Image 1 (cartoon, helix red, strand yellow):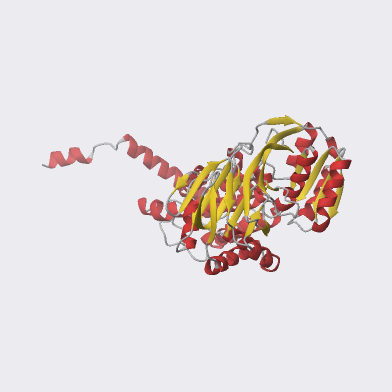
Image 2 (tube, rainbow, N blue to C red):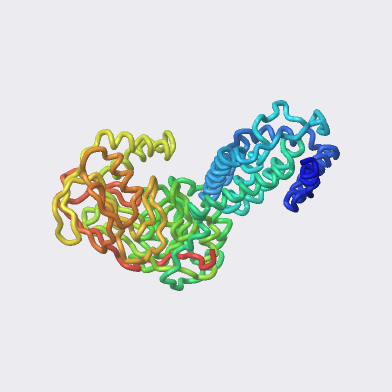
Length: 506
């Protein structure tokens, strides 16, 4: 018995055990080296930085700063993607990571008191949640905007290092936490692709006059559109040879007509409604259009892959452009019976009323709060409208909303999703049938794909929609504009009717 016990006691450790012991020893040695090394200036900064990252507060503040200072949709997307990546990393670390390996926190004997956190963490040491959050946020931001990613990366690295410096974690805790954070950011990208992953519509390619530095270009700026006034200064700096005309909304049509007569192309800076009016003039006069996004949403410009002034400037320099469709409804809102046009969306039902209320409250409380207020008010007080709808002659039905997109949208959601082809000749038609619980019906339609059918909603690809039997006073909305709807009209498309500058290399 004793000999057997003795033989068992002297069995050499397995190779995997020796490797684990060696890694643990190196981990502790590196921790000790950081603790005993003098880092000039770090005693004041790193403990505070580590404390500031508690509960993600540092990153929430950073995201707000990026969105505010960046001032562009790309910057706002980077901030949102960073926070989404952080949320996923925190969920993974706190629900799986820390429960899988219950590692005791480092002993603080070798860490100078001035470095130690005032409140020591009580959770297990492996992996580092702060490092995971920092790496996730920085990676998420960088995947959407390399410039902002370069700004955030040193801060994230400092937060990760501060966890070793203050004695809160071993180096391996930090490395694994950072790896989990990077993985979380890429997982979010797998669920929600970045703009760079989805190629902008590039067909059908066409050539347009090359206008280096804006030569022979007249740019009309709607002074009341979103950030158009600020973007006008950027346009002047980037295109010194262009003529830039700033005007009030009432003078927009007249200035666009002048621009079409004076220049070889029309430039426009404003929101979707402003771009709509410019597109109609450009298509009618047969001149190309240069779009500089300056509104709140800028769906048309973003679907083209144009997010900044420089994107359009590159296309003007090279003369690269694409053909796009122009949505049309006949008769239009004018007294002469001429067609109305839309670049993005046309709708009947609750959406026009929502737009009207949102536009009323938007200047007072902001766009998104106004949209929420408008949705709550509309769904509480509206009634379904009655209409006869069909590709030719349809049947009469009650509906909460009819949506027609100029091209097929990937989804609808709170705002329209992206279109991959702006010259497909198709209308993305979605109808939410009348009935109880309109909010749930609209939500179901928003979550459904572009081809679906149910008792609540229907979605189809069509080339033409005929609508009649609308009651007097019914409103329609197109590209954010609201107008009275005629009793009977047809929605279709002018195929490849508009030439728009767009750089080939994004």
